[in-house]
Length: 227
Image (cartoon, rainbow, N blue to C red; front, side, top):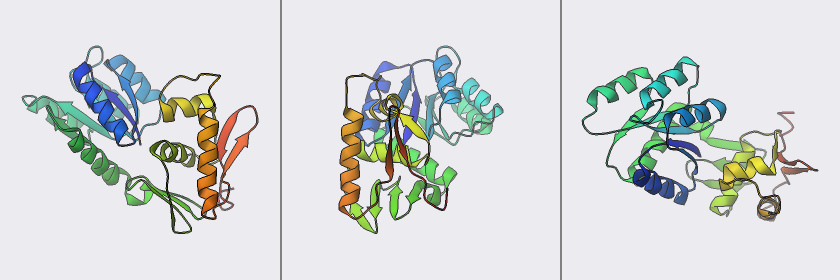
């Protein structure tokens, strides 16, 4: 899952980002409200974790602006224990949940999964093309009902491509969303990971769903019913 995390306290940001990444989340991080709002408006995320007290545009202002603009991204607010009025205002503005500081990363992860299930519904957490199925909650991939053993990185890459069948992604886009850092033109990380992914799917009898687009990048083929 692709998460946007907006928090200005470095200590909290470090342990939350580390904990989420260990569990396979792809995390974009901002330390101020202005940048966080722009990213939330310009990109697609599965969930926004939003501190209320932020430099620049505060969390409640961000939430209000997003909802006014029709952005329905699930939002989990981070609040201090004495911010009851802010929590109530946040829920009234359209927040999906809140968690009070201090908290355990495991609790935050459980809240993320609960919000995604509640907002999206279980069916939308299953990406399916042909006999290939990816479960975003259990993080399992099957092909013809056979389990495909993937690393965290391979799973994240496959999910990223499967979410938009037929869309061509550049290597730069893939690196930024799956690896989380800027593109180095000399690296072949994307190509190597794609090759491993193809082999693992083919090993259980799956088709080659990932197409190479010469000079551009990769895309996940649409099934015949979607074409």
